Length: 80
Image (cartoon, one colour):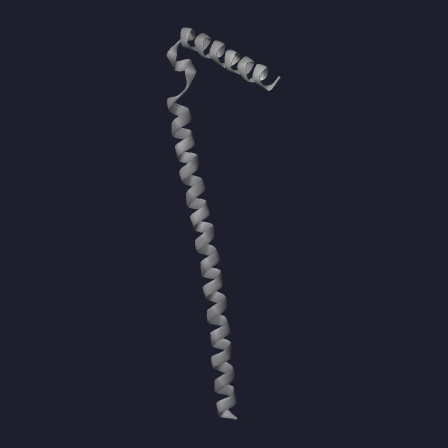
């Protein structure tokens, strides 16, 4: 009788240990995804801050606009 209860406790402990291990693994995966997203956001924000066209003056803005329009026109004519 006592041995059966001990075996039940051991089985319950093993199930609990497996459940906790699975939860910890899922939390690790979630944290890794969160860290990846934070790294990507930081990289994107730093790139967006360094490549603003308005800091270069109106001449550069006009040249960039013309370049973008020409690129769109080239893509349009290649598709046709």
